[in-house]
Every structure is written in structure tokens, then in C-alpha cells.
Length: 437
Image (cartoon, rainbow, N blue to C red):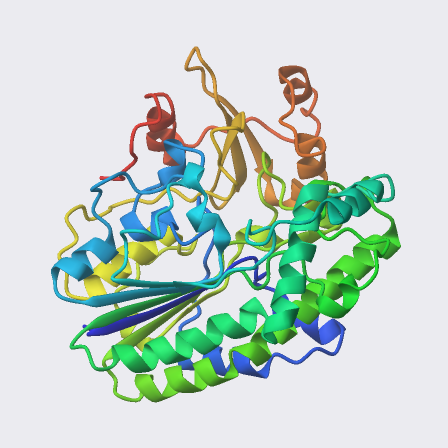
């Protein structure tokens, strides 16, 4: 049992970041030190981990993507945070992830924590209004390269100009605040500190790169690799790696403070990512919204302190965020009301906007097509065929037509797996909340 919990989520940090950084000579010494503080590194996969500090699977232990686009906890729904607060924990969130305050995803910062420090200015946070000239300049660049949104780019430039005047980037401010809050929380009997960083999410350019309009997208589209030149993809990859290195440097004092707190032995540590970013691998740029995630993205950072030994489920497929919820609840001394005897592993960005749900077992990746007539159309993509098949199935990030599915016979085989039956039953029941009993 642990008395306290420190949880750090670094958005869009690819699990293979060490190899990416080594390729370009970028050191990540502080991240390496953090990994040593949490020496349990089980295989972990993204599941239906939504972005933002809502992180609903982690909060509730449910496969939450079945019921809403962003899957925020329902009003009054039990989360491990609400249980902690009822038990007298002091809870604190430090985040620069602006997604969490967008009204359409619930604005869950308001009532989930005792204290919140929201660092403004990351990415397209609507913080500083771009002036008309900046908007015009950005729109005039639209023909030069595909971008997810020129309005996002104008917003980011306006934010960065304001941050430049303060002298500290939002990443530096985030970890400085996290360090201060960790010190303040130690006067409480029990506490939870959640640090949710947007640092490794695009865009990755710094202030110096924004002094002129460069021929490089700030917000790359989630599109086919064919939309970008090899030079664009190389530049994006380099920028991403540099941001990881900058993030590692920015968290130096915080990681040092975490190490001191962990010496007491009564504070547990969890470090997670959600999913990374592609730079041409598997034919994609970005994070394909309606396709299964390839291994580079579905495998996530998961570092746990030794406190979690004996609290993790056994299994070859690895952990997912809803399982980590159960481990946290158990570790902090709460009774888990619904013990799980089986697990469903979700590898896709499973959104209600998609025509598919994606799950996986030892054989390969299984796609289940949503259907109004409750038919069970499945495709099993053997692991050895994943690269070529995912390119075809994705079709530039759009769900394939039924004709496309039938045309894939040479590459994928139809699979039947009793392991997926419970999952399919839930899928066919109006997307009810899913528990594996």
C-alpha cells in the first residue's frame, strides 16, 4: 500500500523515443533518471486512452470510448480521484493541456481536483487573439504545404509571441509549477499530484523558428505520407526529437524533487504517455484517426515504481490504462468492486466517428466493423502483414468501404476468436458501458 501518488502523463511521447533521440544525438538524461525512479516497465498499450487530463479509462477503469467522442467521466461518476478526495487526499493537477478546458469535452478541470494550475499558451490554446494581419499572413501560406489548420497556426504564433515576452515557455512553466506543488503537497497527510504535459504534442518549433514564415507545417495533417516531401518529414521528425530533449531538460528540477519524495517509501510514481506521432511510417503522417494504430503508436510509455509489484494483472498482451486504474485503486487501499477475469485489448483510436473498432490478441489485429444490423464483420490482420494491410485499410485516414474490405482477401483473413465475443456483444448493445466480469 502507498499513501500518496505522483502521476505524470506526457502527451504524444512515443515509446521508442530513446532510439529516435539517439539517431539525432539528442540526450534525454532526465527522462532516463525518471525511468530509474519507476523501474517497473511492463508492456503497455494505448487502449482507448483519450487525450487531455480527462484520461477517462485511467480515471474510471472503463473502456470509455464506447459512449462518446472524448469520453469524459459522467457527472457524479466515480473515479479514483473522487475516491481519493472522499478519503481525505489533497488532489492537485498541473497541466498545460488546453484540450481539457474545451467546453465540448466537458471542461473537467473545474471540479475533479482540489487545486488546478492551468498553464496557458500551448499549441492552439485560444489564449491570445491573433490580429488580422497575422491571420492573413497564415492564410496566404496555405497553398505551400498541407496543414491541419492555418487558424491553429495563427493561434500558436500569437501565443508564442506572448510567451516570448514572459521569458518562459509553457513547458518550463509547467514543470516549475509541478515542483512547487509537490513541495506544498507534502504538508498533507495524503496526496495525489497529477502532472499532464502537452509538451511533446505538435507543433514542436520554438520561438526562433517563428520569426519568419518557413516552408514547414506547424500542425501537420493526419494524412497520407504522399502529401509531404521527404524533406518535410525529416524536418518534422527532427523537430519532434528536439522537443523531447527540451522537455527532458525542463523537467530536471521536478524529477530531482520526485526522487527526494520517493526516498520516504510511501509515495508511488506512475509515468505514462498516450500515443505518439508518425513521420511517414506505415504511409501516414500524424495519428490516423479512423484506423488501427501501428506498433510505434499503440505501445506507450509506462513506468511504475516498485510499489506496483503484485498489483498488476498477469497477461501476455500487456497493460492498458483501465487496468492501471485498478492497480492504483488497489495500491491506495480501496476495494475494487468489479474484479476482472478477462481483458479486452484495444489498439485503435476507437472513436464514435470511426466505422471500425480495433482489438488485438496474440494472432494479430482484429477490426470489427460497426453495423446497424448487428452483423459481425471482422478482419484479422496477422502481425506479419500489418505494414501493408494497414496502408490499405486506412486509405488516407478514412474508413474503407465494404467493397474495399472484400478486396483485401489476399492480404487479410477473416478471423473468429472467442476471445472477442464479449467485446462484440457490447459493441452490438448500443455502446453500453463495458466491464469484463
